[in-house]
Image 1 (cartoon, rainbow, N blue to C red):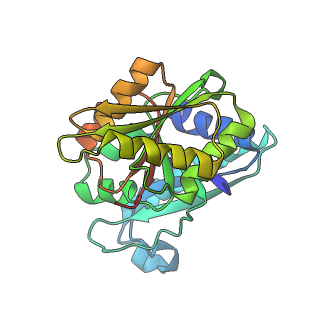
Image 2: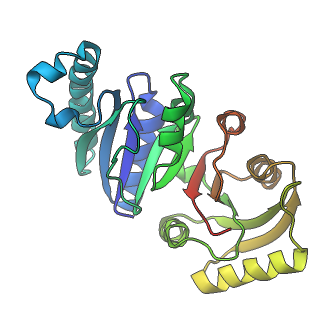
Length: 263
């Protein structure tokens, strides 16, 4: 993993996002980039003064964000971490904005950011960001992670998933619980699921692992039910279909979502 992205807007809870991003960065000894979401044309940096003057609210929010990010960067650097800042400009009238995130980054974000009530386009944009996303409803405490629940189709897991799990193994002592969740829409023979999970464990060198089959109405709901049953502290979920805000709003445990596993 190359860096942690702390994704905030002007309503974000800094204790949840910034503190969690810093804790992870200290654990993994990597850089933090504080990324502030602003509602403004995506080509803001290329606009001249007269064009920017047509967006007075955006100008005000950007200036406020600059002061906030400079304060946050100062706090992060006091912890001997490398830190940078950047803006994420978003305009719902535009299509296919270029966001310039990389797959080997991990975005830390507050669950409420996906559900600020602005519009579906923003939620879709945030959810479909290419890197893995750690979505939180409370501050992450890495020293309390002793059980991680990992669910996927397990036919073949993403390289990003393997990297994240093995990096956590290097710094934390935890049990990894692999669980295949059968839903009403998609069910699989248990023998096939178990063999796939065994192959994933062997291929990726995972240790301290358990294998389970679980039945639930929805994959995400099942992951949290299983995690609660096992005393799980963190969920890692590979998904090939977008998870709705309604599903996420019911989730309490921290979750790393890795998009686009093979169907």
